[in-house]
Amino acid sequence: MEVILIEFKTSKRLDKWVENHRKQGCVSHATAGEQFVYEFIPSGIVECQTVKCLCCGDKFTDYVD
Ligand SMILES: [Zn+2]
Image (cartoon, rainbow, N blue to C red; front, side, top):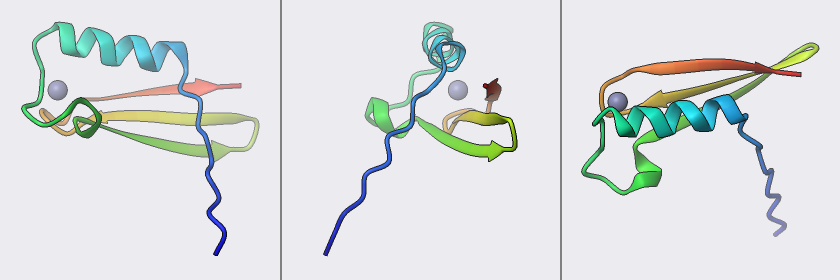
């Protein structure tokens, strides 16, 4: 069986938002990787990237060329 790994590159703004969000005090008791979910939706010319905090439900969307 072949396993295909698709690596997504999160935008700088997305990373920044996550960083700031944690600084604001929203830190999950779960491990770091489980607090945020990422969604990548290619929509024509730009890619729509959304990050959502599972802790408080806050989310941020960025559009990448
Ligand atoms: Zn949060």
